[in-house]
Image (cartoon, rainbow, N blue to C red):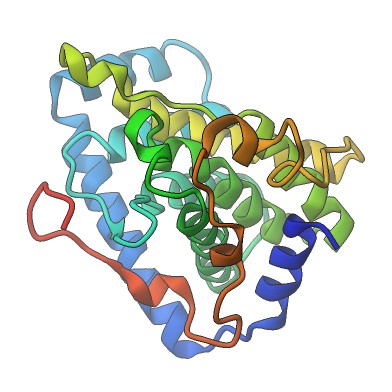
Length: 254
């Protein structure tokens, strides 16, 4: 069984209770607050101008909200994976919630599963990955794809396709930090947008590589010189990764 297939089995075997839904609701509230704060910045005004220049559409909405949520640097953090799952997963879920006939509880469950997918993959990339690649940007598409796929009611094979196509779109480099460019905010927006697209296409039968993680020309081989695939599936019966994610009191990863 491929790694993505095993990850899907792990996530789908876990029960989501009232506690997880309550925790997810706090992360949604935090993400919305970050979105509002991000809009009131130079980068936020540029992004909003771009968004309003054309009719609203789900993919553009997910991108705009995600990019804006990541501007003030006080969005949530999963410390072990160094992934900010909220600015990728939550805008995807909110954008779909505006379009689809889904309940608030379904949206919260999608958030929990999306967090699980991207942070578990983040746990497995190894420390060297972060030297060049921005984990939120590279691992985020997997989480957005899983969250969107959950709302679409994808079958396990379709989830595999969604994750395969999310992984092949994985990107996001740290070079912007050399001169203070605004590119970092694109990472969150594009990760959510790419994951959403992957799930939408999987729903229609568009296939993705089942070995996108461990394949000889896959994600680990391309971007993770010291990948630890075992970390992807560790402690399958333990608590959800959303319980290991924190809301920042200040704009600093800690």
